[in-house]
Picture 1 (cartoon, rainbow, N blue to C red):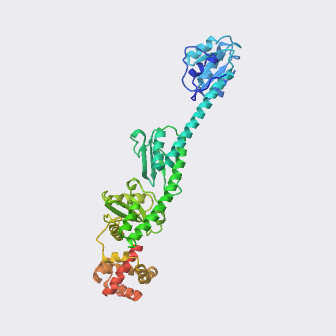
Picture 2: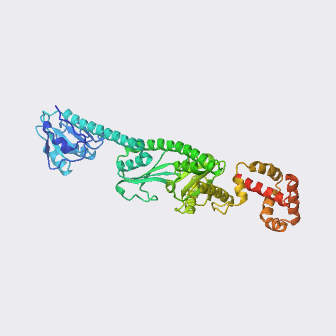
Picture 3: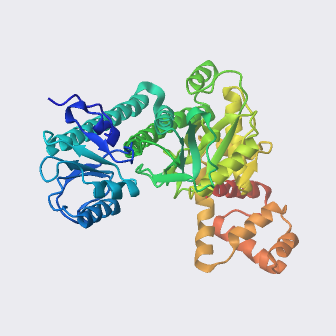
Length: 485
């Protein structure tokens, strides 16, 4: 009965060490420690075309009776990349022929004798069993690795736990990118990872169901590449789950912030609910408000954010992304980083930066200030002092949107049909304190043209820009229009 195989590839020295086979190494070439790929039995004079390399070639020398035939046989086996020749004695030859041994020694190709009582099939069975045991051991190792990765994900450690275990199993560094920004990074044994610009990374796409260009990068070289595909699928599922959870949480937090902003929630109840949303304590915070436009706002609920915002509280309010960060972390720089990330995600945005706050009332004014800052029109906009007009526009119970629509729609329609420039003229007139001369200079128009346009505005809207009360009305309508546009 054959002995129990150890689960590792069988080398020539291991094969020769099996006592029940009674194999004897002949010649001067030592036994190799390279794994045996297969056992090939042949009596061909030139077996090279039928060998793939790494085999032990067994023969009885039935057709190798002359010196030249024996030398050609050794040359052919060596040329094919075989590990060794096993020569069966007691049938065609009583011992291994000397010319065969001499040529094998010259080429440093090991030769061993297989006694008559040992069937060639016993060698083949031993190699096959070793390979099968190695394959089973490999599959069991993969199963354990799969269980480790799935366990890390399901044990509460989430994506961070999964990537940490993946780095350990691969004995390498791994990073995860979304929209071109690094989201997570892990390195086994804290070894330095290659720079992101190096070519020493193997980059793999991860499908998430979103157009986020998600990439898993692994520093080369790494071991156990077979587990990477499974890790990709787990990461894909987890990112999809995180996207749905993120959208849900941002909707809930957004409603909470809207309630605080509208004054429907205040005092102790507001403080308790904000604390449950991660906005409790005495930590001063700042509010960033990103506007990407109505056509792209649908991507905001599930949009992942890069590493600098991992601890931020996020929400979507009025189709804008709210990101609340520590006020000690240079909010302006974070706003710039957020703008860069949104640009890379194909969502160019205007970002308003609200003032610091520690309580619900401060949060309310910080949101108003950030929203007001958006009207400055720059990529990153710092908040100014809140004006009475801006506070009035934040009050949802005042129908300013309807006012703006009713007041300006005739002007907008006339401009669209005739390219008359009335809205621009009105904006300049109000910004320049009602100076016709200043408007004419700013727009490179004749003063009479400015007066004519103002008369058209008066006729279309029923409001005279020259009258103080009407001017306030038009000013508010324009501000609401700019916020909604």
